[in-house]
Amino acid sequence: MSLDSAIQYLTSAMENPSSARSACHMRMCTTGERIEEAFNSCTTFNDRNKLAKSRPKFLRAAIRFLTRKQTAAEHAAMVKDLCNCRCDLENPAMFMQHLGGKENRYASHDNERLLQAVYNIGTWICAVLQGTTKSKFKLGHLTKPSVATPWPASPEDLLPYGLANSVDGLQLWAMEPGADGVYLVAAALVEFYQPFAEATFRAPDYVFALERPLQYIEEAMEPYVKNPNDPRAALHLERIRFIHLFLRAHLLHNYSGRFVNMLVYKKKRAYPVMNKLWGLVAGRPPNDDIRSGTALLRDLCKLEFHPRTGEPYLPPDQTMDASDTIPGPSNEVEDALSHMYQVRSGGCLNPTCKSNRDGVTTRLCGRCSIVRYCGEECQKAAWKHPEYPHKVLCAKIYNLKQQLGLKDWKPVLDRAQTSGEGSEPFLKLCKAKRVDLAAVQEIADTLQSLRDPILANTGQGMRTSEAASLHSSVLI
Image (cartoon, rainbow, N blue to C red; front, side, top):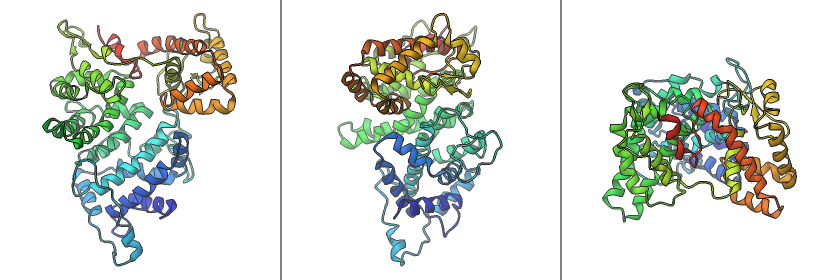
């Protein structure tokens, strides 16, 4: 089956999920594997991003399908309908489209083929959002995009059913057994669009933001606890990776403080789960994401609300242990790439800007292509800042760009855009071009100094290796 045919079928099925002629879980699974194959054939993140962006109609159908506005009963009826194959299997071509369906890694249930398709569809959404500047839209509010307009063109195009209904739609999928892949899409939405992140917090139960993720973690730990020597048990534990990405996205983008407040409010429910999980992952390598993330979440569950101020604080009889479990950057390049990623994908870096929040539309400095400002006024102020003039930083970054060569600089930006992925190749490149690593460290240190007051003033989250000091921004 060609990629075009697979995309066309999936688009039709997602637009008309109740149509017996266009929707079937087995065909969706088979065609989902075809788009997964095309996706995996791309050797770089940039290639995957371009491939996904080239199918805006498919992406719009996908986000509508996953965030569909309907009741729980209507969702259950839709899933049941999709899992009821009524295709003409006597047709050889149709029969071939029912031969796919890789064995589910974790469990066996009636709709696992459909959920595999949902996961494959979701990876395309993630690739686009991860490769797009946060909260950046081509069109204004309420502007209807054309079929060919890149997705997402506006907030309404990103979430066509609105914030509340979109969370409801994703939650309906999340409640399906084995549908943890939905949290991969949710994590990408949290990172890309701050209003969505805030919309997921629904007191007092926090079903989508916390309760269901905790249930997935408990289910994943059960076979591991029963028989840790069973090689299949580790696969079950890997199931929490998508949940970890979702919680980590909230942790790193904790603008309002509501994520920490939620953990404190639900600590009696969350701490036992995180503590038990820590017992299983503590032996993993120090730089393992699940290990470091679990350590941080476990620490945050130790906080309590201060009786006088109502703010989270650490009781005298508790200690924050995560700083002892999280390694810092292994080299100057990793540190610089991590900061460049955060700065390039974030908001205004003018130290005196009063609006340096992630949701503000910003523009790149045309010379260094790393630092962003929310307007000409902020850029001029930063250029001559008395302590950290961008004039100096810009020259250092530009000099690094010239030393590496423009041909090699773009891959550097691509790696920076994927959160420091590929620091070792960049380190080798710097050494091959005889770049002074001390100068690279100076760039990292300056970006760190610029980011620190902004993080402190806005409550923004940090990358995992910085989050060991998270308690300083939430404790009294």
